[in-house]
Image (cartoon, rainbow, N blue to C red; front, side, top):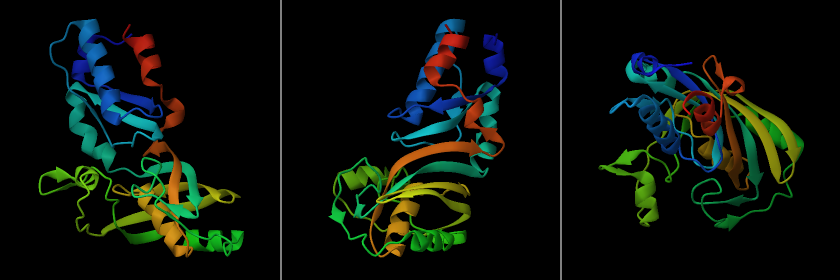
Length: 230
């Protein structure tokens, strides 16, 4: 059983983030229970890479002195699985916002889907979604988007090591992606739809790996609390 000193000295916790939780809520939950159990006034807890509320999967939490290692974990290659829905777009590129446009998918064949996915492998330029936590002039982009303000977003160089189509059941397409830090899978879904001469949005996302860490070894936050902090 871990002690209060263990958490202060530093721990790497592998958490399987549930659907609808924010990454911040996970951090807050774990930190609060560590403080309560061990009567600690202050303890640093941080995460290595945000997951959107509609995404699930691996979240690396670092405590105490190990929070200094967060940037190292953030820089590592990540793997995701998920689902893209073709034939429509949303302003957030996922299900956080309502569909704003629909497109034909009659011309889309399985062969076209596989060929188009290959075009995204390697080093590419990607524009982050307007609904993101990137800051511009001191404000997060999603805050500007919710206020109805438009802003210019610059392209970023990212690397897609693999974009594998694992199942096609139109309009749904399931995938596996291995990518570099800074990749937005929502943007990949949107760009994929455009490349297919249609539209697309991300309808499911799960982060399965960060570097050598796998979600198979992760625990949901409430289970972690029950097993270690109750």
